Length: 125
Image (tube, rainbow, N blue to C red; front, top):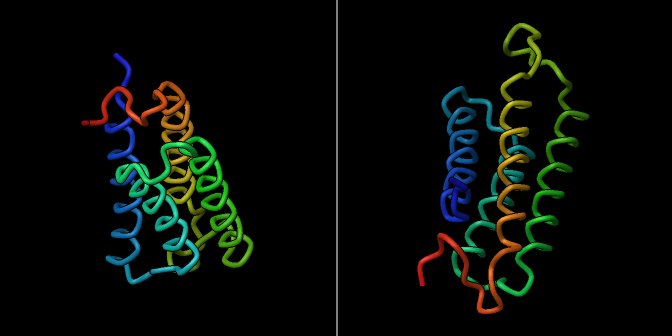
């Protein structure tokens, strides 16, 4: 069974909120990382509001690209290891980015099956 676009979108949103919550709980809120999460959350909010039905695929690709760019800038700025964690590799960052990318690409692919009215499997009318 293929997950519906709604399930994929909710899962992506939960990953972003989890990422922000981890950083808030450990007092390590990084503006670039939070901004990348917000970009994805805004894309999902626009999808849910149906404001971008004609450009859903392009907006998803652009949002995902900005997400990647912001996280790459963070890594250039802060490094691949976290001094707060004794110089450990930022495995959680890579896991969260990979999860977001896989789910976002899957959602973008699923959005390609939505008809001209912006309706598709999983979205309530």
